[in-house]
Image 1 (cartoon, one colour):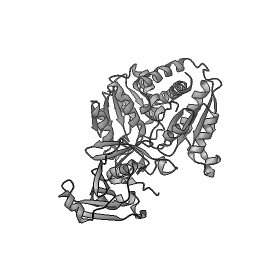
Image 2 (cartoon, each protein chain N blue to C red; image 1 turned 90 degrees about the horizontal axis):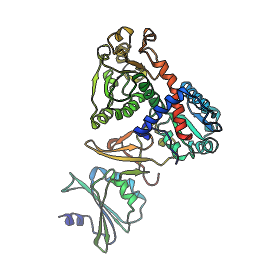
Image 3 (tube, rainbow over the protein chains, first blue to last red; image 1 turned 120 degrees about the horizontal axis):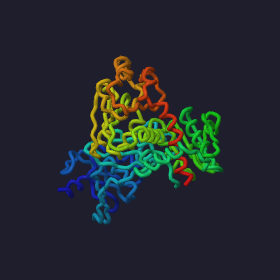
Length: 157
Length: 299
């Protein structure tokens, strides 16, 4: 079933398939990974049926592989996303996104008075999983940024 | 990275107790144990009380003090980054006492500085030396820190002093009572903090009838600018004014603390009541700050 759905959007020879992205987050994922600047062939699928999510999106990128840092950026908005590494049409590795204990240089503190929004400082947060979802506690101002206020610093800003 | 005091969480229970104990020693005896040391007090926004208290503390310990009380006449006004300012000053001094309007600035400074940093207030975030002087005042007046009832009154939503004191006193089996208008109630995260530690608290909106079991009555200012609706402010502004008549059935050992400056939340007729302790509390600030400075650079 899963394979059938992936085939709807073209198989790739070598590259990465990012699966289980919530549809609502597809364009943020594209922005965070700076895919608009990518020269490789890219295919997007959106509003696909999913066993795990209400509606999922997938991205297939030829000839492109991602570092852990990129994967962590995605973790904040698509915590269930999976990175499938494709070599010669076969999935050779599946990497599950995990939310790390510390988030460095990825998210922006939502507190307008936080020093990180006024000086050239790399942001740092501790992550906290609660019944209200994922919370980021700023290492500097100690204020809590929740998912609704989350802004990801894209790679080229 | 040298040990700094940026947030009240930076000190363990043992360290908090050590500072309180040392403050009592410095109150009795002002030996110049830091002779030859240089303390920089760098205030990016004005604060007469805190700056003079730190400078008095450093002077009483025999240290020399350098610094500025207004960033306008420094290279900061030329656009120098906080990083460069801190790097430079940490080349000169043995300790930096810093106040800055931005939240988190002191943590950042402590990561850059080669010498310890004491946070003397970073915006609305932390002001840990205030908490330590509050604790010293509690110890001095009650003879202990354990098993007390602390009643906090006024702006419990934005008041950083009540939040830090709550966290520090959570080590000591404290019972808390919160008295505030609905708009300025203690935030959920702090109530959760107490619940996680199994510490009891109750919430009230009336002042006079809820203070008789208090060991410490911690008053704070209800500020007009905290209210989005000025009518709401007018409704509550006189509800949280402590009057001498309210004190007649309170515990004989009860003391009233206030981080100051006070505006009208304690009537002048309370000042002569022996339970009024806020001016003495401010004096204790010098001893608590001597203990903190000594702890960071004198041992």
